[in-house]
Amino acid sequence: MPSVDDIRTALARVIDPELRASIVELGMVRSIDAHENGVVDVTVSLTTPGCPIRNHFQTSVVKEAKTVEGVTHVNVTFDVLSDTEKQGLQQKLGRSGGLPSGALAQVANVICVGSGKGGVGKSSVTANLAAALTAEGKKVGVLDADVWGYSIPRMFGLGGQRPPVSATRKILPLEAGGVKVMSIGFFVEEDSAVVWRGPMLHKALTQFLEDVDWGELDYLLVDLPPGTGDVSMTLAQLLPQAQFLIVTTPQATAQKVARRAAEMATKVNLEIGGIVENMSGFATPTGERYAIFGEGGGQELADELDVPLFGKVPLTMPLREQADAGVPLVATDPDDPAAQAIRSVARGIIAITPTQPIALQMAPEEPAATLPIVESKPKPKGMSLPMA
Ligand SMILES: Nc1ncnc2c1ncn2[C@@H]1O[C@H](COP(=O)(O)OP(=O)(O)OP(=O)(O)O)[C@@H](O)[C@H]1O
Image (cartoon, rainbow, N blue to C red; front, side):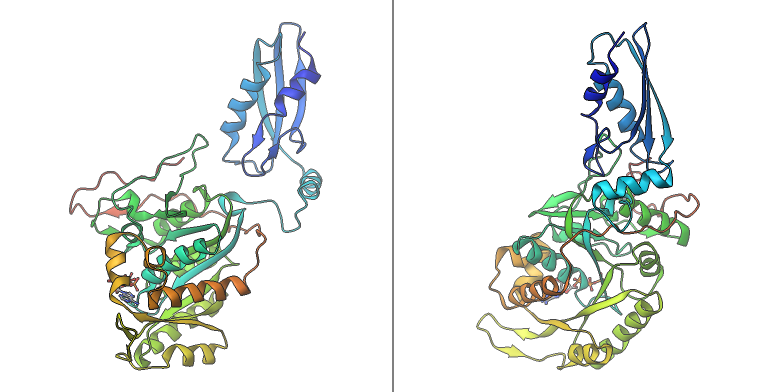
């Protein structure tokens, strides 16, 4: 008959990918029964009944138990840890804020980058801020939630690519310059029009947060669509601990619409982290500056909302050229005036954000909904996100 102790030692090699520890050490192996004929029954206790990595445990437990002499067959069953057992597990992990819930468990800060209106440079700021935070030694991810105008793949030179899926059915973000990138643009034919309805949008955004393997990140930057619509509301619900960074331009009218975005954020309890003023004058290659859109809008908004103005980013030709070339300017020419301003924004953000991961609480899932409809112009490649 196989030895139960040997089986337990073998099962210590099964690692919970989210908790990053052995299931034996975590107390998740409820029982091991070995029989004369070499059949072994193992019960594994999960943290939640719908645990997405159940299949991973099933395969790994069978594989490791079978390495023990005399084991002919392995039956794996699952149950769920009781509340007291979960508390014990939490203590073992040394966490106070709840067990990690999904893919964002190891993300320290989520920063939603939004604007009142389109075209103010929100995506350019997001891409360059990601590069600047990376240059400061931080682990950074970018989620392009600008479902109607996704431009992040192009800005990172990742247009036309499709992310792989891991053995545990998680989508793996693509990487560019050390930044992990995920976008709805990876799943639709380039330039196709995506028509979203409320519940589908909610479901797709939930999948981007829960089913993408973001891993350990200091910052997840979320590029929001302009305005105060559905996406922002959904994300505010899903990410109650996110900060909102508002990108605006210097003129008074832009400031007025940016204020509306700020009001929306306050209504849904998103904390406003600060302001970035973009297109803050035009900087020539020789360093002269022309205030073509006026001055002071960003500071006024920051004063009014009582939040910091993280920086004033001038218009420079290389910033636009680099966006088109697919490598953020900060990575290619950190001394350009716009790159310098964004690097200073990054340092300001680092100064006021925590460094320890927080277990973000995801809101309960909405009832299942189908994925976005794509108008056939051109014909879509197939719209399902590759996940269960
Ligand atoms: N500081 C800047 N200097 C030069 N060009 C800039 C600057 N900021 C943005 N741009 C250019 O302005 C255009 C719009 O920028 P971007 O796409 O980042 O704006 P957006 O606010 O994200 O737009 P949308 O709301 O449509 O998604 C792009 O061509 C971009 O390269």
